[in-house]
Amino acid sequence: MTEQRIDLGLTSTSATGGGCGAGCGCGHGAAASTASAERGDSTATDVLRVEGMTCEHCVRAVTDELNALDGVRVVDIDLRVGDASLVRIEGTADDAALIAAIDEAGYTLVR
Image (cartoon, rainbow, N blue to C red; front, side, top):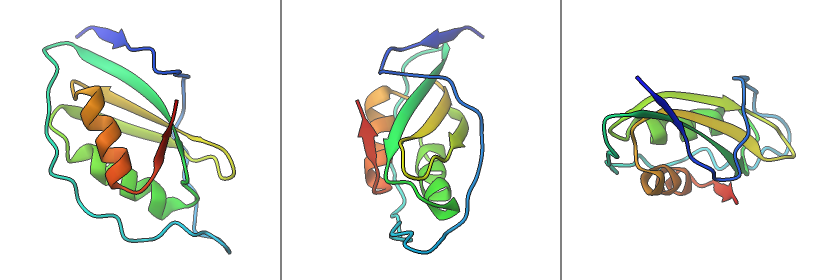
């Protein structure tokens, strides 16, 4: 497999978690996505900056939405409360589908 980087204002990340705290405001009710897309045979790694994630539930909601996409193999989230969290996605899913899944989960992609 070949790794391909796509420039979306990306940085590298490691996985961490978090827990709901006072004033979380995460919504705790993301709907499941049925989006599906593929971009070819090569595996890519995208690291997206996502605002609005404040707890472990937020991490699960985004992870579930992204894992529902065809071609997503790995989702790794570095939760950064008070800042944009880093979401690393490995696989062949289309960038538009990744962005739509993050939006569907109720969070905002930082460009």
